[in-house]
Image (cartoon, protein in one colour):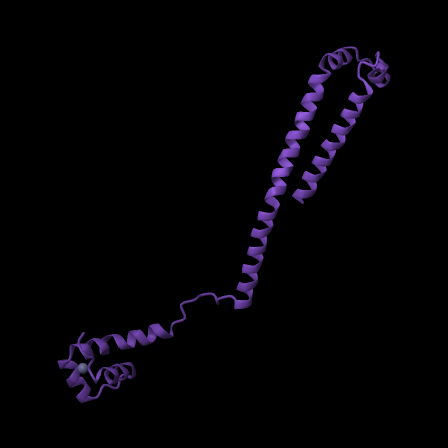
Length: 159
Ligand SMILES: [Zn+2]
């Protein structure tokens, strides 16, 4: 690397101010480094003074707060993931329970549905020769409340 010309700083400063003396002009004519410095110095000074940002940067505390909030939402998402797995498991459990109940008493349900009349609708379920027994009714009530609980949890979790 070649050594820097001693006059370069003076030449650049004078070029920016537009006050190149005769002796400096004579030096610039013979020195390529100083010629380049004299040519580029006014532009570099203007460039350094331009404010390139159209909008000001936000305050450092605002950036810090945003980072904290983002980290908090990422952590909340990480924590709620097992809950989502539990929710899906409860959907599968409830759907499977209903499928099992319907399969278990399918012939009785079919018989009951085919024989439904408005008068028998109320008393028919328990009345017909205890076809749909108390354990079955308890299972249905349990499954129904479980379904309502899962549905409520889903609705509340979405809000
Ligand atoms: Zn020079």
